[in-house]
Amino acid sequence: MGKVIGILAGSLHRDSFSKKIAKTIKSFVPQEGYEFKIIDLEGLPVYNQDFDTDKNIPWAIERFRADMQSVDGVIFVTPEYNRSVPSVLKNAIDIGSAPFGKSIWNEKPAAIFSHSPGNISGFGANHHLRQSLVFLNMPTMQQPEVYITNSDALFSVNGVMIEGSTKDFVRSAVNSYIKWFEKSYSTI
Image (cartoon, rainbow, N blue to C red; front, side, top):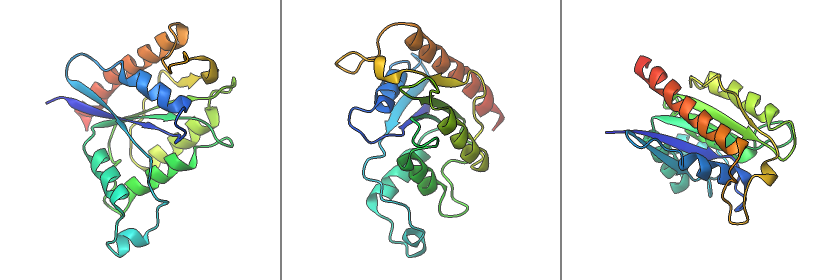
C-alpha cells in the first residue's frame, strides 16, 4: 500500500492562491507508491476544549481528525496574514492536536510552502508555522525552503499554474519532499 500525503491549504477563499498551489502540488504526485490528498478546512468550527471534555465533538472536527489520521505526511500551503499563519490553519492545527495525548500530527513528516503576492513570500507565516510543528513533533523539511513570491501572477484565468521557473521550483520542491519523506519516514 502506498503512502498518503495530506495537503492543507491555509485559506478558505474559493479562488485562493493557496488552493491553486495545493492543486498544483497534487498534480506532481509520484507515479507509484503515493497518493496526494487535499484535506478541506471548510466548515471547521473554532476549537473549544469543551467539545472533547463533553464528548460532543462536531462532525466537521471528527471528519477532519479522521482524514488527518489517514495520512502519512503533510504539506502545508500557507499565505501570510498579518505576518503570521491564517486563523483557519492555526485552528486546524489546534483541532488536530487535541485532546491531550491524541494528537494526529505526531511524527508526520511535513513541508511548508508559503506564498504571498509580494516579495516577502510568506516568510513570517512560514516561520510561525515551523514553531508550531516543532511543538507538535512533526519533522519538517529544511531544504529547500519554499517561499513563493508574486502568487497573484502565477495562474491562468482557469486557475492553472503557468509554466515557468516557479512551477519548476514547486515541482522540484515536491520531489525533494518525497525524497526527504522517505528518509524521515523510515526512521520513525
